[in-house]
Image 1 (tube, rainbow, N blue to C red):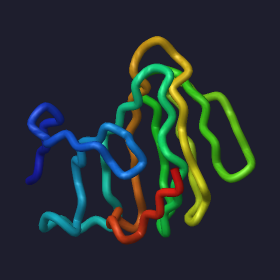
Image 2: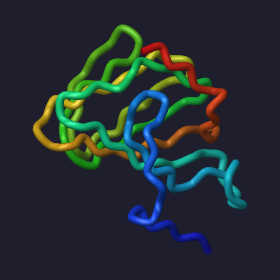
Image 3: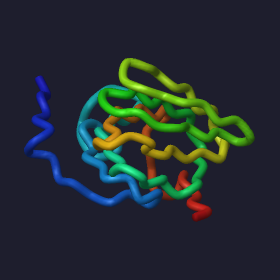
Image 4: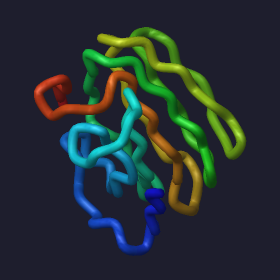
Length: 120
């Protein structure tokens, strides 16, 4: 059995400038899943760097509000919404609220640094 405590996970600044805590990644631990799962935060007024992944990605918004930009589309997002991001799509998310924008990120197949291209 594997149980991860978010409060005990190491916080990093990801390549796209998101504050991130990786919860599950089969490339880093012995678990039989294809995807990786991370907890992400973007501070008020900040926008992540434009980037694309070789994998598809899903964001699930836990708290806050913002705008998601995927290729040439922009939509408002808020708590309780899931956003599908196709592989190789240029993406970024902006926090338009007054509190942190908090979301889960699921990447399938699992996230690897070499599969991400940041364009800033």
